Length: 100
Image (cartoon, rainbow, N blue to C red; front, side):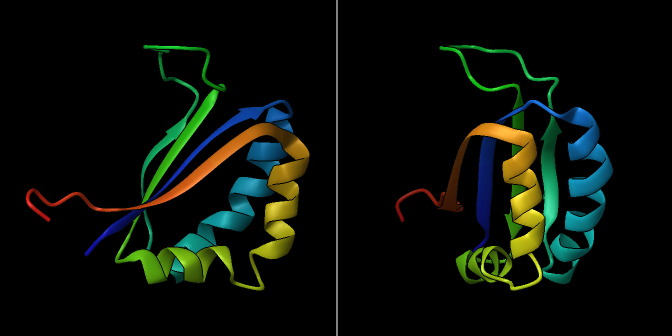
């Protein structure tokens, strides 16, 4: 069953995010069979004061999500994300199936 990585974060260094993080994370997402469904800062707040960036990535299953998050090649890339963002909130959620 598919699983989703949902990340909300405040990007405070857009040049670092786009110039360093994104080019390095995309090949790793591809390696783990991920499909990016939402990425960017075009969202509109419907409630509360969310950070300025939302990312939703679809994986084959929760094992694939954790495989990506724990990939040794991702660890230095994650450090870049932590350097150029704040207020990060991330969840790994299985796909919803009615009655399941």
